[in-house]
Image 1: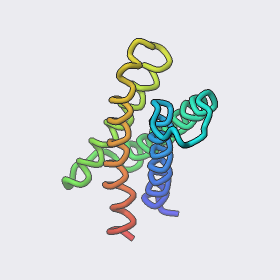
Image 2: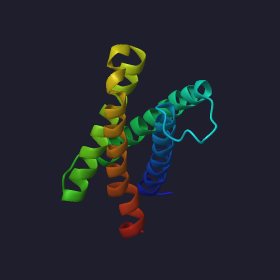
Image 3: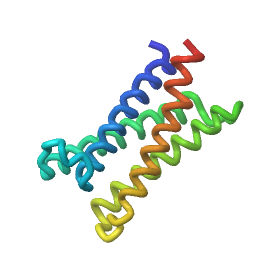
Length: 135
């Protein structure tokens, strides 16, 4: 399997996990009250899936840097790199604030939104781009 296809598949999985993270985060904040999910297991699920998402994002980012390298041959590639770096940074900041600096949790929604929209931008400029224009 070519590296670009594997990267596109994993990035699509990251996007699906990020959507799940958004819904679980919104449910924990009181949205979707009609969905009967107890909050304690949902918090654990949110944390575990967030860890997996961060790990996959880190692996994909390192593979990109190691095997593909940094080059800004087009606006699409530069945007992909910027969104990917911002997504990874926002996820690390959110995990550190949730685990080490609890007083920063009041910003968790904003940090999560930055992470989520950055993952979306990365997905649009990598996986979706690959499946639509490169295959």
